[in-house]
Image (cartoon, rainbow, N blue to C red; front, side, top):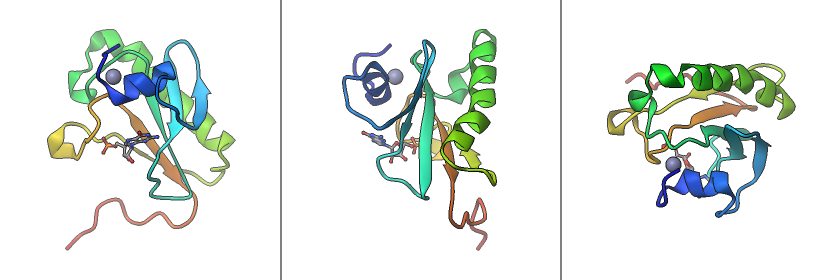
Length: 116
Ligand code: 5GP
Ligand code: ZN
């Protein structure tokens, strides 16, 4: 846990959020600024800065998170599929430096990257 991390504070319940799921290792909550009708994030309670900082020791936790995503997506009504995004590092557009998986769906999901 990191004292000054927004998502650590959300996972600890110190900053309110619309909770989707919680267990002893992970926390999921709706994005405050959704890009689609359903947009939530899944984070480890462990403060991990990004996927770039993940190590072998985190393999089980990351695997658990990946397997949890389709279950939570379905619970949120995404019967027809979803998009999963992990922005990693400044070069990947990450803005909050606590590893999080975006789960996005419902409505029209545009192509992943706009080609010019
Ligand atoms: P990133 O760009 O780091 O992948 O995504 C950060 C996400 O966190 C953004 O989609 C943003 O809308 C969301 N976010 C930022 N601050 C808050 C907050 O205080 N509460 C919630 N629920 N989401 C937040
Ligand atoms: Zn954190």
